[in-house]
Each structure stands twice: as C-alpha cells, then as structure tokens.
Amino acid sequence: MSRKRASSGVVGGGGGAARSGSGGARESAGRGTEAARVALLAKRLAAPGASGVGVGIGDDAAVLDPVDGSLVWTIDAQVDGTHFRMAWLGWEDVGWRSFMAAASDLAAMGATPVAALSALTLADDVDDAALDALARGQADAARAVSAPVVGGNLARGRETSITTTLLGRAERPVLRSGAREGDGVYLAGAVGMAAAGLLALERGAHLGDPSVDACVDAWRRPRALVERGLAMRGLASAAVDVSDGLACDAGHLAEASAVTLLFDERLLRARAGDALERAAALLGRDLLDMLVHGGGEDYALLVTSPSPIEGFDRVGVVEGDGPGVSLLRIDGARTAVDPRGFDHFG
Image (cartoon, rainbow, N blue to C red; front, side, top):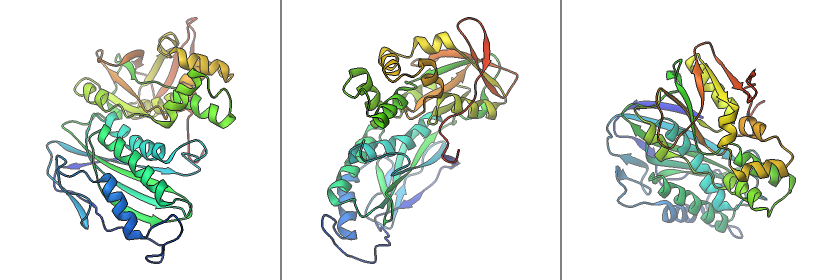
C-alpha cells in the first residue's frame, strides 16, 4: 500500500464522469445503464456540505479546499478472489472493508481523513442491488471516519475490484523510520482475530460458536483506528498499521528504523482476549502463532514511543542492533521471529 505526501493545495479527484469498457449504454437483467449506475452511486455516496469539499460527486473532478499541514495520500485495492470471497461476505461488508483498509493507512500516520475517491471495476455478475449494497457499505465507512467519497470511476471488467484512494492531513505525519533504542513498543487494537475468523470460514468449522463468530465479525467488519492514530501524534516515534500480520509489519518498521523490536510473549498473551484464545483452541492453532503470524486484517496499530500512550498497550521494547524482530519467551529465552505474513506474490 502506497503512501504519498505533498504540500497543501487545491486537489483534483475523479468526479462524476465515469468511464467504462462496456461498449456504451447497454442494459441487461438486474443491471442499469452506466449513467443509471453512476446516479445510483452518487445518491449513496454524495455528502453535500462536507467540510473541506468545494466540489464533490457530479462534476468532471472533485475540488477540495486547502488544508493546514501536510497532505497524506494512500490507495488500497480489494480484489474478488484475492481479498474476499462472496460466499463469506455480503456486498455491504465488501464496501466497508475496502474503505477501512485505506483508512487504516492514514491512522498509522496520525492523519485526519479528509476525502476519498472510489474506483469500481465490476464483473457481469454484480447487479444493481449488489452495487447499491456495496455503496451503502462504503458510505457507512466513510461516515465512520468522516471522509466523504467525492468522486471516482466506474468500469466493467472480468473480476470485481474496489480501489479506494484516501486523502488525509497531518501537521507532522508519523513515519516508520523514527523508532529509537529504548523506546517502548505499543499496540492498539486486536491482532489475530481476523485471521482466526478467516480460517474458520475457510474450514467451515465451529461457526456459531460465539468466540469464533466474534473473530468472523472482526474479519468482515474491521475498523480503522483513526482516533487512536490521532492520539499518538506528538508521542509516537514510529508507527505502522498491522495489515499483513504483526511479525511482517513489525519487520517493516524495524527495517525502516534500523532497529530490533523485541516483543514480550507474556505481554502479548495477556492482551489476546478470551475470544481469540478459545477460537484458536477450537481451530487447533497455537495462540502465540495466531498473535504473531496469524494475519493482519484487524488493522491494529503498532507504534514505538519513549512514553506510554493512552489506548495503547506496551508489548515490548526497541533495541539498537537491527533490523530485526525478536521474542522474549516466558521462560526467559530469546528467539528470532521470522517476519513473514501475507504476501501477494509470496
């Protein structure tokens, strides 16, 4: 997931003029014309009078008012068959998840969300009812993080994908490269819950158990920790969102800062929670492995800081010899951690 920064100014985004490779205004069962579908999206996503938005959906491009501080940009794509399977999700869930994945990047940089662009490529099996549900999920997520969708693009393709570009602002964005020896390592949000939920869906196992269902809900409806991201500003020395797994994303931060992150097994286990502990047991997975290598779509925030931060739990310490990720075991032994996680091409 890319992150780009620029100085403040008027920004043009994709407006209401959608493009499509569908060959014109054809209509089939359950699917309206391109113009009708653009109107459907505009109705669901438009946010008249949104703060900072000069021109939103309905023109050739969006216009945003100048902002104080730096602009923080991110983009995230969710592709059918890679990031989700419709057998396990509703279209509203897909819309929600696609938006929150992008919003989590802003949270990790301590940025306040401003506005979003949404580019939809729709396969032929996505009818207007599905499109409306997808847009409802996007709109709900946009309201939850106060970042209206101000434009985008609509196209036809062989597989459905949702690409969300999100713009935020921050006086001083928190980067991955600022961790220093002696800093504490802190976590906000769950790790491992979403991975356990996905594993249960893949196996079709233990669904209906309250603990497993809580993990499934964590995968279906993650929430970007924007408020926690704002709380760490001015305190965190470095940060990253956990989108590919705790070990993997800790490795990214350690590499950028040239340090070693030493996690404390006792502290990680203490904050795991009863639902994950029971779900891991039911699914035959080691709890520590779920925490460290389980996956990352909980979108937790991992930060380093010389002092505690409200809403974050201490789980380790930064050491000067790096880069690397290590684990202090309960018995006092120290082991290196393989920084593996989700990899599109691994």
